[in-house]
Length: 283
Ligand code: GUN
Image (cartoon, rainbow, N blue to C red; front, side, top):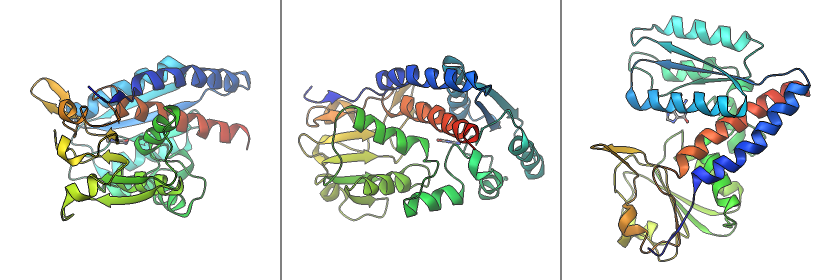
């Protein structure tokens, strides 16, 4: 294998110590940072993600509460819960796990979260601020990618970055963040013509499409940095959007799945929750 591993698990672990110290500093001022997570329905992947978020909070001393609601929950019930969490002084961050059951209106739910508790960074106010380069909560996965690159000493400024995927959660904010770091950014998607011509130009390739093994070795420039955001269950294995075995022969750096971007997403959720609590403490 030619590629070096971009180890998200180890990076998240080392950040955890700094985060525990920040929790202790807040507690010394009488503030325990608190996160509320709302999970509607029984999506198995969402259940796993929420459990991992809960455990990570525990590990650094952040108070967390998980509201598990049945699939049959109405929009009004969900909005009522969010209103309560918005007003609850124990809670500094509110996160509604996506996707929601189809009959619920995701856009309206995100809009109901107080922007200063929106630790996912999905509220239009935070998304707009990110676009304009103003201080905002930054979505956890894109922020995790940036920190992972930074901690590995991989420069971004002036480099060709290709993002594959244009979701509101990953692709779009990742493109904006990397642009703000002075990368030259292309965002590709399902309608991109000649995708491989774009991906082969990338110094840094970020892939978030949700298709197992979508990026193959012939689509990657030798020595490129490959960041795989995908988490796909294939049989009893978790695999990314990148064909790890093939691509790791040509890439310079690669994130594994699991153990790459996933732990960084959770680490950035803790980071955003700490920031929310710290803002309150200095208000
Ligand atoms: N579903 C997949 N990723 C995320 C995330 O980062 N936040 C929320 N709330 N839901 C998700």
